[in-house]
Amino acid sequence: MEDLQPGILEIIRSRGIGDGALEEFLSPRPRLAYDPFLLANMREGVDLLLRAVDEGKRIVIYGDYDVDGITSTALLMKVIGYLTDNVTYYIPSRLDEGYGLHRESIDRIIEDGGEFILTVDCGSSSKEETAYARSRGVETLVTDHHNMSGDRAEGTVINPRLPEDGYPFKGLAGVGVAYKLALAVAKERSIPGPLMAEVLEFVTIGTVADIMPMLDENRTIVKCGLRSIHLGCRNKGLRELIDRSALDYRTLKSGDISFGIAPKINASGRLGDASLGVRLLLSDDEKEIAECCDSLIEANKERRRLQDEAYERGTEMLDDELEKGDFIIVEINDSHEGVLGIVAGKLREKVNRPVVVISGNGDSYKGTGRSIESVDLFAMLDKYRDRFRSFGGHSAACGFTIDAGNMQQLRDDLNRDLKEACERDPDILEEKYKSDAAIEPGEIDLQFAEALELIEPCGKDNEVPVFALRNVRAENWRFLKDDHRMAKFALRDENGGKIDAVMFRNAAEAYIITEKGAADMLCNIEINTWRDERKAQVIVRKVLPAGTL
Image (cartoon, rainbow, N blue to C red; front, side, top):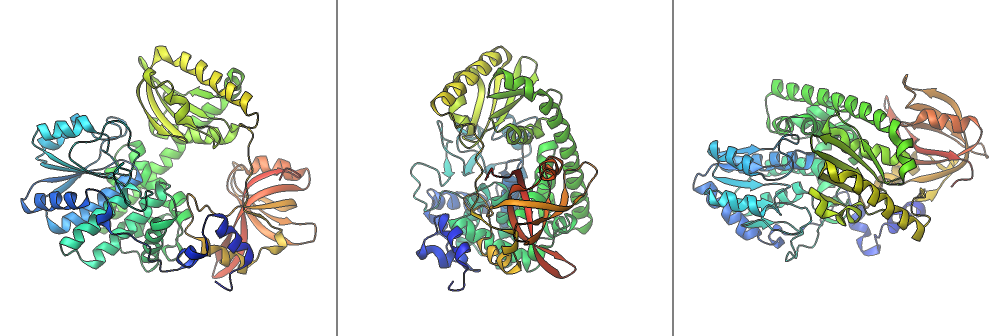
């Protein structure tokens, strides 16, 4: 730590890491972890689960269709599957069933012989559904990590966000809670160490993909899981997907998971069959693994095509919507429901306004929204909760179903409310350009880039450091694809310092600004490895007229 560059240390301390926690934060082998039995109801849950195992009950792991739910399901299939062959899983369809427990799904499970339902990444508020399962003679054990509001599931619930829970860290992903259950089971029954090391890789993928805080115990989990992957990756399916994603398992970082691995696993749940991801992680058969990878990669390509198509349609409506007010609601019908949340996020980035994308379905609309940091989307819509057929979310994102007859009034009310908020705070919709530090191209070298890697793994609450480059000129501009989204170029400062740069989004717009002369830029710094040669480069995130930053 004595050799830590002052600039790097300043960035770490700005994230709330004091001297007492610094050694643990920087350690390649962190030890911060908590006893799983500190989670409320864990003892009761383990006893309930092991009794079901011993009695030979048909155990069904009920997961969610996102990466967190898929990795949670695969993890407990591996661990419980070591204790009994009488275990299977069920993941509801995003399109036909939606999130969480459903009576119809419970009926299907019972028809298939299910006798014990173990939920992962869902179920905390499913009071009616768990009561229904019990009335049908099926016990339930809920593991989840979502905020609790209103009703609570019957039976045993393990969730660090329970009001009575005293677990020291509330930021576990759903797969983190499932892993804690597995660790607790391993204290009662003999589970092989290599198996527990393998499923730690699943916890790493799910925690990063679900954008959980990359601090405290999550940092320990992800660091240890990444180390397992770097040493060879125990799980064959995950190793193959990493290879097929043009990534190197030996140097895999949290950002590679976010942008290279998670979207492919997520695509199966977005467009159809989320069980593809579970099958990939559970299989030892090379042919099946290859087929699963093929399907996931193709599903992701189709997801991107549908997403781009819907985004273009949404972009065409923005000007008209902005004339109505600053709360943007665009109607995109006949597009795949699974991509509309991503589209809402991209439109939000374009206009720096809260955006809701709605899709008509007969006498109702489904909506999914994304907001900016200064506007609490959940609070805005929760004010009109009684108008929705269903509604949920948090400050940055929401989802709802509403009767078609209520939609126009909701639009008017939200625009009025946001206008009043802007009158109280005129800067609420001003885009804020944040950076960790200012730097010049000549100051960026391999040594500095290597020192920055001490901050990894990065994620929520420990973001990849952002640097401000002021008054720099772009040279040797080269677009990488016909659509001009990506480009390579060099950046030079007033003192002659120079650094290679790459841009993966909005390069055409950036080029127009740089052609006018010097510009300000926001960027990340990384190490580019090519044929065993390592050098620093910057990833440009935003290009602005000189003098903006």
